[in-house]
Image (cartoon, rainbow, N blue to C red; front, top):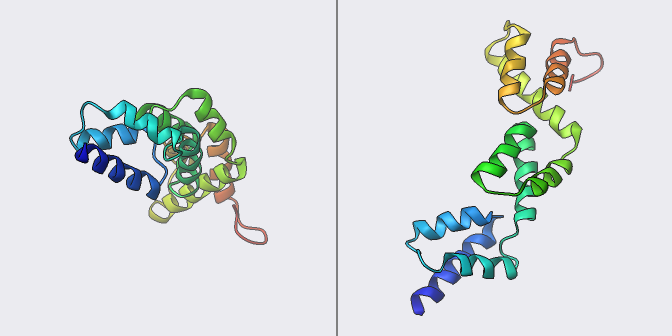
Length: 156
C-alpha cells in the first residue's frame, strides 16, 4: 500500500505542474512500472481535477498554434492520435483559437522561412505551410502578405 500511495502522490505532483492528457498520464505510469492500477488511478485524477481532457486540449491547441507555429490540422491530428482526445473536444478547443492567431502563426512561419530562403518560389512556402497543418487559404494569405511591401508597418 505504501508504494501505491507514493505513486499516487508522485503522479499528482507531476500532473499539477502542467496540463496532462489521460494518455500522457497512462504512458507515464506505465514508464514508472505501474501495470495493474493505471485506470483507477487515472479515474481518481480526473475526479480530483488533476487531469481534464478538455482543459488539456484547449491549452495544447493555443500553445501549439501560438508558440510552436503549428496549423490547426496538425494540432487536431496531434490531439487525436498522440493524446486520444475525442473529435468533438478537439473541435471545441480549436474553435477557441482565433483566426487572427492562426494567420499570425502562418506569417511567422513564412518570415522564418524567408530568412534562409529569400528568393524561394512562393509555391514552396505554401507547400511548407500545408505540411505544418495550415489550410490553403491561410497559407496563400500569409505568403502574399509577406511578399507585399509593407505600407505603414509590419505586414502581418
